[in-house]
Length: 496
Image (cartoon, rainbow, N blue to C red; front, side):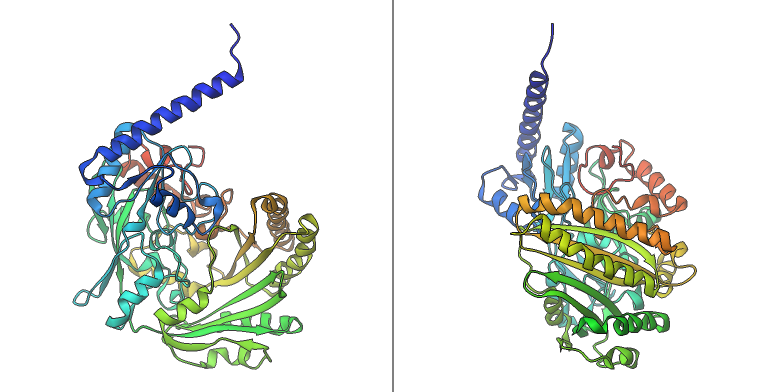
């Protein structure tokens, strides 16, 4: 008897729907999860879909479960394990690619309702839940005149940012966000709660610093607080003919940056339909000190506008964030290169060549591109060693000096226009990396929080760190739930 492909597909779809009903009904039947499981078409389900930063990531799950406590997450973990439910994890929902933080054929565990921030003055610890956004964290800590090593935009979620490393305005002075975690509260695949810190489960503590969603559900993060809540900084825009001077200022600044200095710099190369190409520097002092000597070379370059100001971080960070419309088709890519003028120039020149190709492919599209250029310095990386280490593998990357990490973002108005432009954008990233290889300036390291779905970060963390991650995964998740059933984010074993 001959069986048609259509019949096989129909059976598979039917089996998926049946499993979906069982998983969602079983979750909804748990005492602690009543009124926290939402089906397609419900008001909460639809609102959560609309709250994703990128429309690509907003996937129509079988159902969404929105826990409000660690106990709720325990119930979810046990149900997922028992029913073998495919699932995804969402914290802030700021990753951009399909499958990054939402699942289609499965259950989306949406941590948005776990969003509190508290401060223990005696211990100097700020505790956040993973669904908090950094803007609300800074608001909550402001009355205490403290802050934490957090994101540079208000809308980014705490959970994904911190477990993926977390590049911050404080990184030169204090390292990455994950380096400043004193304790992770984690619900393991079997529903057990553990605290991972320097004294207990220290292997898990270290592995979670860069391990992303591979080891369990992170339900609380205890951050080492930083004294002070002030920030000085902003954007400065230049005419394009000042490019070489701005690039030189960036390179010289990074070369001269002192260990633990609160001063930092980023460059931004932008294009949009209204303004065309623009060139900006982003200068910051994480202690709120204005016009530091380290920025003297930048300050000597004539500019055409500046937003630089100072004040509480809770007020300044939203200015960096700017308007963040939800539901557009955003895509992020990343790579790393050597710290050199020719690395910067190659990226800029290829960006200028890219835009006409995008315009030709979709003449009626409204889109924008952004290239963010930021340093990875030995000073940033050294902090990890004093706090138990992490698994990022950057020690080898910066052993011979600072490197250039870059983000390429393209945001498009419609899905149809994205289909036309995305292959060109991907080709651009390939072309830049090939150019860097040809020049001898390519560095094989991927920043997870910026990476697109095929830019696997873990193979670049080094053999020792990938071995630790594998060992910790096997020890704390022997059934491989977070490798096999978890369908979102980057996995230690991408083939699962």
